[in-house]
Image (tube, rainbow, N blue to C red; front, side):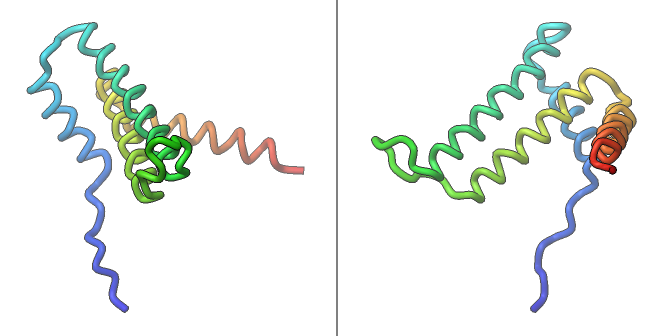
Length: 114
């Protein structure tokens, strides 16, 4: 069986391209624009919650309205939005995030060692 999934684009090249596109089409500039870009993350997290509620049928009025694939897609939107917010704060987002992940990995692995 052959996997027909196309290769994923380079994450950070995509984040840089999306960041440039958003900056070009930004309706609000300056500090307010920065804060709105960060606030967008809350909207995306809310969409994850909505999808989880929908996949589990927790709203009796609506029933099951989503799939686990919808939840996955919404989680991906959260990740992209968070990386775009970080990229808006610093052009060194790749290095900042990489350093942070390394620190989280180190403290997590150290805390689980005997």
